[in-house]
Image (cartoon, rainbow, N blue to C red):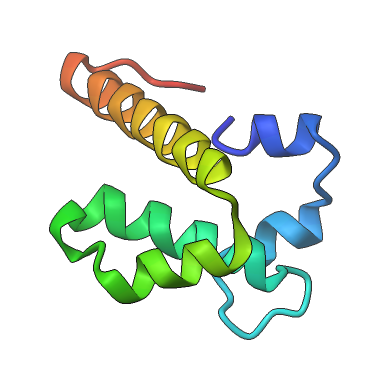
Length: 90
């Protein structure tokens, strides 16, 4: 369920499995930057530093960054909501 959207968008099981592999060539540098951002945002948003913003700006336009931030915060929020109220997303 967690990766249903990725599957729907055409991501293969191999690519989904590579998400947590920093050395995988299946994940592009652009995707890796977005993943690093989402991970830091979810774990400790105060660790989203200037270096990470600079990395994002190297791969995304300002409008794309806004969209990335909006989507990441929404999904993080819904995940926390589900955990707090005890909903199983599967």
